[in-house]
Figure (cartoon, rainbow, N blue to C red):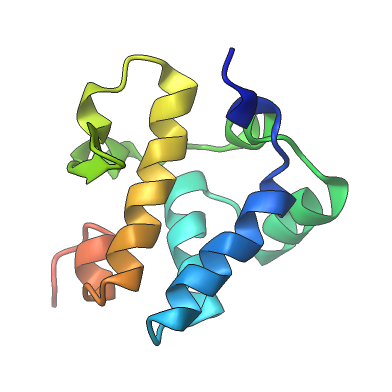
Length: 116
């Protein structure tokens, strides 16, 4: 079992916030991406942050977006679509989405929606 699985989401979240804010994006955009992937609204996200939920439990509680499988590309040299462990793949999905936000990708593309 990877050590990341027992890491609290609350300890990782500030790093995500810093990453997107350094690149001129907002915490609200990050939260929108997390909600899109996990189904957690602001209240649920706040609960997980305050409770110190592990990443394993965080993703166990999530209702993964059906379009999550369309997330492709590499994170740290590993293609997310090729990650075999289901939990690690979910963590990598989130990492990839955060990377896309930080790189300035339009939100409709990050969220895999069609522009109107």
